[in-house]
Length: 228
Image 1 (cartoon, rainbow, N blue to C red):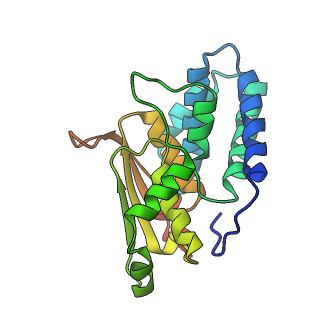
Image 2 (spheres, one colour; image 1 turned 60 degrees about the vertical axis):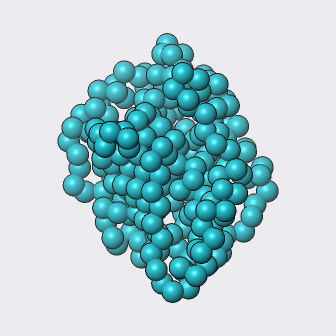
């Protein structure tokens, strides 16, 4: 998806596939709770991206099979369509599409604090926090991002967007380390960073206690050829 000279597109380009995603999701696998369906879709998408680059993680592959086999054939096909719509929505620019979808579906959990920052706010914060980005890039210095409570990856995507707007390829100049205590949130980050070809390590764990339950490395990090 990397674009070295991104052009700001009409929001309709992003909102139309998001609207279709939301509509399709509401009718998919009605025999399961919406939280459950969203969680399973996120895991299956993340696993497909991870195991698309060898070597495969056999434990994740088995979990994928156990998960997807709980759904009827039509709903498995719907998962594929949902993934295609996600790719389409992410295509114009790096932004937190999954977080906005999550909130629009009213899946936010106030007790866990699962409220994802709007992309426009993340972009503003990124510009405020990386004031020396132009100097770093001009010197050829790598840009590393650490996000200890990543949510769906909005801040990392905002940094990638800032790099793209300066004419550089995030796959070549950027790396990220992101962690979240919630598995679904962490995998939302993993999916979106993978689709934007950002070299990143995404951890399901706790940044305060240094707990690491799962480690997911994006395809761009696992296979350097993908950064070219």
